[in-house]
Amino acid sequence: MFKHLWRIYEAAAMLLGLGLLALLCLLWTLPALLLHALLPPSAGQRVGRAVIRLSFRFYLAALTLLCACRFDLRELDQLARERGPRVVVANHPSLLDALILASRLPNAVCVMKAALARNLLLGAGARLARYIVNDAPLPMLRHATRALQDGATLIIFPEGTRTATPPVDACAATAGILAARAGVPVQAVLIEMSSLYLGKRWTLWRPPALPLTVRVRRGECWRFDRAPDGAKSAAVRHFGPRLEAYFRGALAPDLAPGPAAASAQAAGPQPPESEASS
Image (cartoon, rainbow, N blue to C red; front, side, top):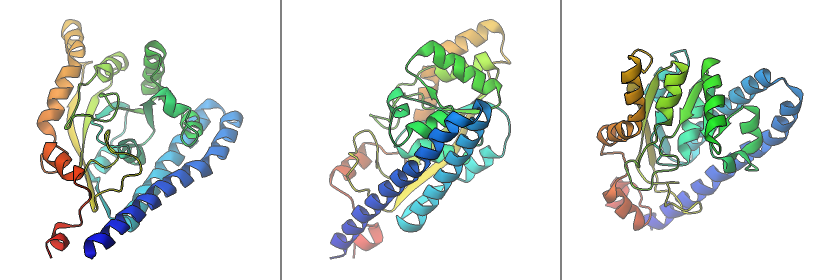
């Protein structure tokens, strides 16, 4: 009996969470379009990034209160208190990742797919915040370098898309190239989840396995501007494989979704263990 009730709650929590996110994005769409037309670019991006940060903080608080989600973001909050431009790289297990990082990191700008920039729910806010589209490499590099030189925190998921084979897929060297060009550090962030919810192989309307636990840890930091030119060039060239190897070694096995977790998820969502055994 409890299992059936718990699955009903999981489905209700999914609808509430997705519906609230859609509502927040829709409510911001028209104001973002108007402000994009009326404000100078610098003012528009400040307003856009601030609204995104506050909206996503509210959204995560709502998921915590109503949807049995638990977010351990203490190390991310500590990182957010440190000022200065940087490239933040993270593994990408879920659609929630960008929301989590943008909810905490100040003056954050994301590198995103062109399809997302044209999305009805996300496009207007992303354009106002001057998020960077990755469809053309050279313009992307130019815009991202300028954002870093202006003091932004640049968020990059080096896998390019959500992880298909946990714990991490092959990583591109883009973050290292940008950091070397702008003379800023690359800061790794590790995102660990108790389930594969909204991952690459998780359909949008499939309920989560609750409670959902998400932990974000601060990882290693790299600097290329302090190395001689020859060493810097080699380090940047090999940064993708180095980053992939780092993520594979650093992601904690207890929360990182691996083959065992994938098999458990395929059987369907389960209630908390203490209740399931009763």
